[in-house]
Every structure is written in C-alpha cells, then in structure tokens.
Image (cartoon, rainbow, N blue to C red; front, top):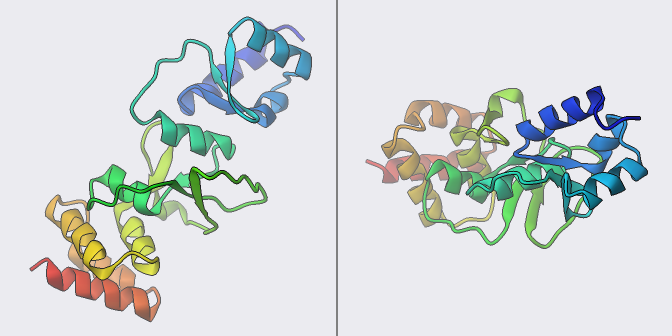
Length: 195
C-alpha cells in the first residue's frame, strides 16, 4: 500500500484531532502494516512517544499535550477527570501527582504516571478541550466528592467553580441529590462554605 493513499489523509485527520498522537492500533486500522510503520519512523514522519503510541513528526508542542497524549494512548476513549480536570477548569489548588483519566472498556493500560478511574460516563458528563475530552465542571465536582479528597479541599474546589461561574449552585445541588448520600452531604457542605 502506498503511503500517499487515502490512509495517510485519514491518519493525519485522526492525529490532528488528538494533538498529533495516534496509536499503533489506529494506524493498523487505517492500513499501515509494520513495514510502513518502520519506514515512517525511519524517515521521522512519525516519532515513537510511548509503547504503541506515535506522534506525527514535527508536530508543534503545546502546554496541554500531555493530556492529549494520555487520551490518545487509550485510543481516544479516555477522558481527563477528577483532580486533573479540576486543575484544567481552574478549581482549587490540587496539584495532582498523576494525570487522572476516566476510561471504560477492555483496554488495560497501566502506567505510574496515570490514575485510571474505571467509570462509565454519559455524553452530558464530557466536554471537549479541543484535542482531548474532560469531564464537565459539575461531573468533576461530583467525582471529587465521591473520592478521597478532604472536605476543606472540596470546599475550595466548589467555591472556585461557583465564583468563576463554571458551576450553577442549584444545578450542582440537584445533581448531587441524584448521587450517593455521601456525595450529596459533601456537596451540600461545600456549597454552604461558599456563602
């Protein structure tokens, strides 16, 4: 198969949506066999970033490329979540040690730089950040309330989210009421700290 055929265009289109990244599986689905992979790596048309993850050669770097990279590593199926989503939304000062992602499916990638949460998200829980997806502000708060962060930290996250207008307090209260009792209580406490 020629590297100038339609597969090259499709791969470039896919990689563009993922900040230049793509998996070996995605390339194979578009018709790139192992010989073509070697040629593209040898000519620096592609660069190897991680095991089974490539990036188009000469792709410009960006401040958010790490998030796009991890989402692409999961075949574009992961969503930035929890502490990482809170940081991106500008809520609190969590400074996560890991990149937090939600990924639901058969792919079992593990890496010490990742915190993988196996949660099934609804489309309404996800928003686009251009070259990757992240949980919405409300979903981010609910995930943090369900997790292990302290109440003081959750209060800061919620108050920041409300103060900058990314979360409507009434909508958050309603959504928390549809969650577990623990989440509802923690969110109610956090909202009361914002007044």
